[in-house]
Image (cartoon, rainbow, N blue to C red):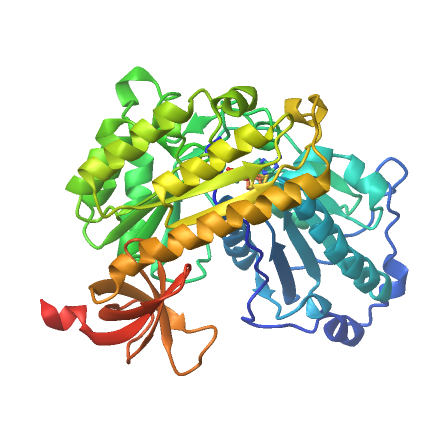
Length: 495
Ligand code: 5AD
Ligand code: SF4
């Protein structure tokens, strides 16, 4: 897989919190009568307390992992809203506590398991609560979820979000797991976090066999969605106020290969068709794989007005020997050729990456090559990861596993290079006026606004504008991650 960007965790936003337990009391129900035995094999079915449509119900979802998971959670929100659920401000006021999990590294597992402890406590206080675990971690352990965490009521893999609705609407509340791989089941209503930004999932699954990666086993084989259906969906997003769309897939630029010949288009063509939609002013995508980064896709960045000057090109390692053991199917030279082609066609393009440190057998000389590539490319930003052995992956049992302190020490050296180069790269923006899509208030300074440039750089700036507006910002200073400036004028006034 290309890798779907860096990890982020988001929790639910208050829309409306209901007081189900209070209503149940008023309805004469006694929650303690509704105890549900935990283990699916020993359970007897009980009446589902959340089934009654006359009752207000609330949910809370916590998201771990990549943008694909963030998007899946938006689909959960939309689906639950259509079932009459409101979003609760916090877990302790929710009738349905959901986790959308990630399994990419061990740290993702352990973060989630710590949160699950709180759900256990809340459930013991109010046993009619439903606890649901979806996403990649659930898929990777399947029914073991119920053995390890007997208080979990429903578990489902990333392709089975729609089954949550089936479960919630069923009469029985014996614990259920849904882990099939099906064709794309994306036709769910979506509740977007920001109305002016939307995701378009163009494919699911991944046909790569990167030896460190759990994703092919959690998200299945690659299936591209029909281009006609995608364009209709993108048009609907534009009509609904989306100005920036991000095309999503584990390996976006291999798009189209699984389509029947009469319907098949490549990724560059798909980009062109989305670019032609009125109202879509910015297009991004994540993540591409360097092996599929063809010249037509790179040229599209120079030719299509909406396609942003930003490419995420996961390196993983700068050593050809390590890349081979990772089964990445490119070597250092081919990767650098892609970078050169990007610089040739789109000189100002921001290039970001993912790098894994401490892969099994990585020697000091291999690591030095990673440092060299990071130095030479000068990434605008990088997600850096310590290698984490994942169950049932080839790399987990490879010889030459490195001690943790070695990985940490290499990570520190890599961070120094990555941050220094990103800071240097960001200097090119100082003194320039850049188009910024306003996202809201600055997280660090309430008096400022925050937005993003076409290069994907976060900007904090002084000025007045509403979220969703484009403004021109004069950049004054930078750090490795963020730009700062002053808004000159709303871009609409420039036209
Ligand atoms: N250990 C560390 N990092 C990993 N990634 C994927 N699998 C692992 C692993 N087992 C990183 C890759 C990928 C990103 C999303 O996560 O860099 O591109
Ligand atoms: Fe995303 Fe799943 Fe991969 Fe985590 S394991 S990064 S959630 S696809």
